[in-house]
Amino acid sequence: MAGHSQFKNIMHRKGRVDAVRSKVFSKLAREITVAAKLGTPDPSMNPRLRAAILAARAENMPKDNIERAIKKAAGGDAENYEEVRYEGYGPGGAALIVEAQTDNRNRTASDVRSAFTKSGGSLAETGAVSFMFDHVGLVAFDAKVADADTMLEAAIEAGADDVKSDEGGHEVICEQGAMGEVSKTLEARFGEPRRTALIWRAQNTVDVDDETAEKLIRLVETIEDQDDVQNVFVNFAVSDAMMAKMQG
Image (cartoon, rainbow, N blue to C red):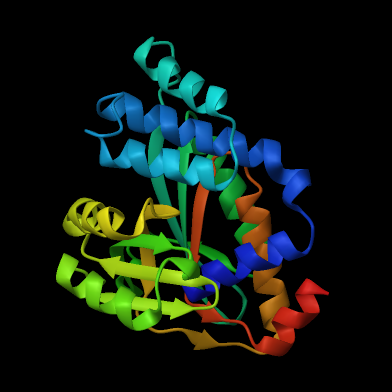
């Protein structure tokens, strides 16, 4: 989880936001459409759709784009996307989980496998690395909504399992089935969270040297750049020195 956040931070600080904005919007719209199609188009009754809309707002996606993505599902003309998960090992034996939504499983598998292979890693069977992660709910807030102690107390009362607070914000972790209730309870006190999502959280992170870290970061960026890929989760940490180098 920490590694995943680090890469997002690197991407933004490297000034890639404008270059990838249209791709980000496309992925967000796909998730909104899939969520609305699988459930109800009413976000108050569809936790996954609400989470998708929150993610879109966090990226400043225009309201018209969000509404259009929901209407696409309601209209019945949306593509049939299959949700797939890939697992593999990158340089240094680091573990990665890739979540994708695709209308062509063979194409997506080929693209993801190619990215792993070119990086010196390898795609593995489903379940090969996921046992090293916990599939949990995440509810995130900006740091300004509360101090660390207040958020921890409120999160525990709401039924959460863990909280990580730093200058970047608060990340509240809970069981999958509790995410809706935890999010609703905390929102009533602190306002709308900036993100709610189901994530793969590494049980332990592995340290890698800077050369390996650079290769892994490039691998993550290559995979995330693929149209069908929605999320990438990792179990390795990047040193402060490496972070500074990549952000420079």
